[in-house]
Image 1 (tube, helix red, strand yellow):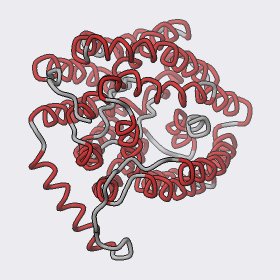
Image 2 (image 1 turned 60 degrees about the vertical axis):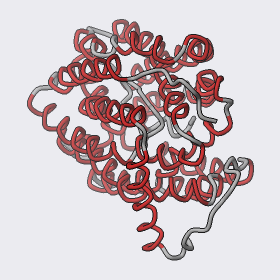
Image 3 (image 1 turned 180 degrees about the vertical axis):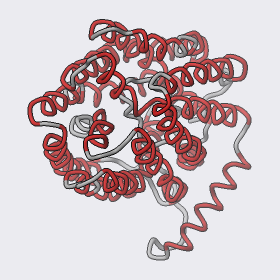
Length: 401
């Protein structure tokens, strides 16, 4: 979390400095979403069949290697390929949510997910500020080269820890084709994905539709927060990092009481009113006139996200039996709902990648036409997501183990 959070908020600046246009930024991020289509079902299938830990530990080594081409990219096209590869191997990301869900008692998932977000988040609070400081001091290109090399080294360390320290949460395993038989394994995993879609009960389908709506409209704007802040509000990279630090600090401080309130009062009762605030966030961003306006906005964002993320992760886990959790999470994501000016969302689910890819490309086109358009479209879309949740999402009657 610490090292990967350093470069991620500044990817759009890196792309532009290497010759990219707003459309190029949309393409680079769109390719990352397309990459998820290839292997996400495989991750969920293996996780529900042979176990979670070996998959997560092994593939994290590949994720660490994916930082190297970012460090030596001569142009934005290389960044596009690097981003594609990084998200190709990120198919293990939902399985981390599965391990957390398996490990948390059903009635304490709000608190458990809040802690799972807060503890790594606390370690990563300072990292965006470090990234911004380095960019102001060294320049966008040189700073990013250094940051991605540090990310590679840290990724190797994290992969080693996951491989040898995580404990398996899948109680029974079943035979599947050998990992050496990739074509057959992919075929079986995609067939399993289709079976999971057929099995999925209505509450999970409601959450899936909600995820599609909010991911699409979030991603129309997500790569362009930092460009707009830099070009039209006059925010430097280090100030942007400081804003990220403020947002992260608020989220960490609010996370534990938020999780306890979610467990005590129920998911829906707290989440729906907070979701109704989200359409106003991009509009408030467009009205900001300086650092302190943005600081006030990110305080609100951080507090709201402290409820939304663990709340929706809990809902997905509550509705999903343990034996299906890997495949469901790989299909619809872990329930993330994250309106963040850093635009740092990664991972997702099979059903989300095509909408996200289209949205990211569309965002680049819209930003070229008018720098405010992506945020205005996002505002409308988040309103639709909030209305859908208010009308369709229900509190689970029983909680799955």
